[in-house]
Length: 191
Image (cartoon, rainbow, N blue to C red):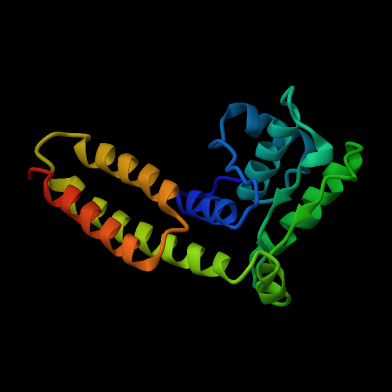
């Protein structure tokens, strides 16, 4: 599910390792409606959002349950986030979609084993792309308040986010050049 723009970097990292991954569209009213329909009302909003996004995808005409899986990371701690995948599983089962896996990367145990199945480059691609995206987002925050032409910084950001997603999987030298060019694009924004 889309949770932030870093989700696009993770999706691209999966694709660079041979997994046909796609990031679900940003949540809309339909997603919220579907998520609330299957939630008790005691869950936090991000659970309802991610569930609604999954359900909206399931309702698409071309959804193939035999060739689909949903990805939901897991983490421990005081937040209920670690329980999302279990509740998602329960709803999918209730809908008769037992064959659709919910893939979980668990930070507490098994993460290294889970990502090892994707090859050693998955973590490298994910780390590099997220580090570059973090730097690009810092440039956005530095430029946007002072831009001479309102909206220019966001337009440059969208362009470079799209370019980054297309370049995930490149070697380190190419990514260094990519980062340099992205920095130059933000430097060119008039303030």
